[in-house]
Image (tube, rainbow, N blue to C red; front, side, top):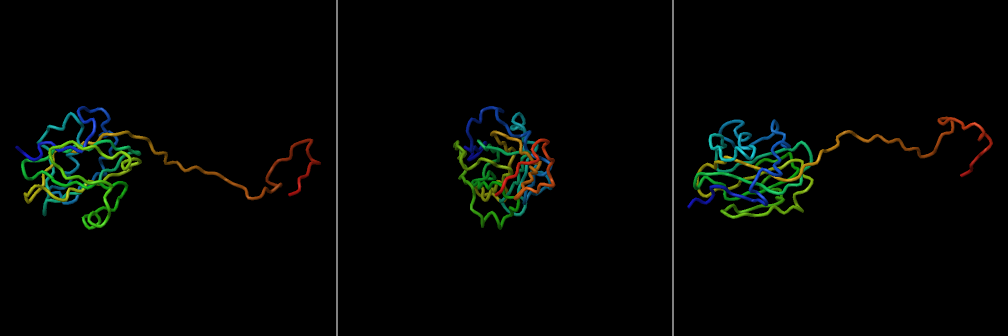
Length: 195
C-alpha cells in the first residue's frame, strides 16, 4: 500500500465547498526547486481537477520544494489537501509559514513554522487559530519517503476569504483650532471661549 496516494491535512475535505482556488493570485504563485519552470503553478487546481495526473511538479536538485501562494484578500485557512506520488516520491514532511514573502530554503530552516506535519495516510485538522488573517502562504516540503525527487499533482486550499480594503483612510486632526480657517456663524460673533 502506498504511503500517500492522497495526503491530507484537512477538515471537511470531501467537496469543493469553501475552495479558495478563485481567491489565489495565481500569476504570483512561485515554486522553488521545480525541475520545469512554472510547473508549480499547475498543481494549484480547482477541486474538480484534483485527479488529473497530467499536470504535476517535480523537484529538481533534491527532494525539497517550497510553494509561495498569495491570496487576493485575507483568508482564514481551514484545510490543505495534497495529492502526490507515486510511492516514495510523496512528500513526508510539510511545514507551513504564513504572511512571509521572503521565504527560501535557508529561511525555511531558520524561521519557526506556523505549523508542521508528518504526512502519512491520515487526516489532520489545521489549527484554525494559527491560520487566520493569511495573506500569503508558504508550503515547505522538506522530505519525502526516500526518492531523489518529490512529485506533487494537486494542492487544494479551503477556508474563508475576506476582501482587504487597500484604500488609505485620510484623516486630518487639528491640535488647536485656527479661527481663521473656519467660517463665522452669523449671530454668534460675541461668543468667546477661553481655554
